Length: 198
View 1 (cartoon, rainbow, N blue to C red):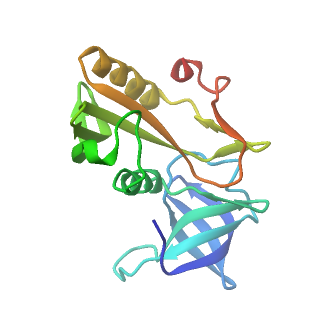
View 2: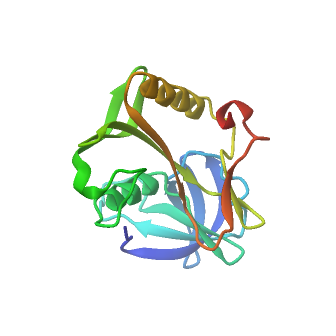
């Protein structure tokens, strides 16, 4: 996936989880933050950020804040990006999910309900039915990426529902999309949320 109409700015502050004040070309703009998570180690005063300008002139905010530099590393914080990137991956000729190959896929349906959860994707394949939950990873320390960056009751609920899906005869995947380059590896962040990591 690619962004169009992007510009760079300097992060000032975040009065609430939906908006941020960003300096763009010497002017302070109110921007929509495309991530309701804390991102407290990323969205710090003075950080360089990447914004996408909207074509919709009726919007209250002209820009979406989609990425931030942590030192020299660019980290995408757009909550929609992991699902879009993973969907593109599933449709690519080199995609693999366990032993499922593109030729095995009959149907992909976003936002599908199972039990008490709505999962990011449902896939009907020649090898069975699959529920998939996608999590974006934006937390990095010493070139190691971790999830979650905050306690996640919703994430734990999703994981437990995926397990129920497996007990009911479905296949299930929890997919972590690393939203940055140049890291060593990924690990669950047990100190942040032991229940989810279990």
